[in-house]
Length: 115
Image 1 (cartoon, rainbow, N blue to C red):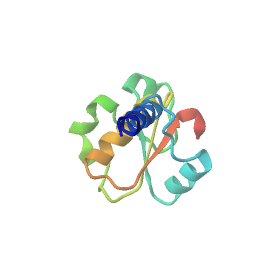
Image 2: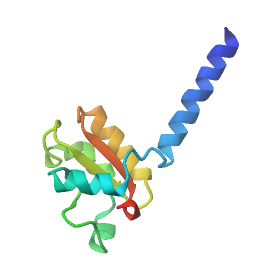
Image 3: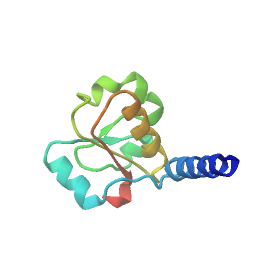
């Protein structure tokens, strides 16, 4: 039994690492573009300086660390949201934050270059 618990723990830790390091991306660029074309909110969770240097068309900027205080700006919790950042780390964290706050249709694009 102890072996099963240990193996389960390793799977959980490995899974958390997978998401934590930006590999938790759950859609490709073409899928993201289709969702946005259909009305999904496009959310850039980089810093305002990064956003000012360039962003995807139609994106709103809410830095990941400000997201819990600015959830109302994202829109209704049952509306599709596509989240991106520079490398995928912050978008993964933001995706989890949104899901933790009841957003049910959150999609992690990961890095902006995946668009």
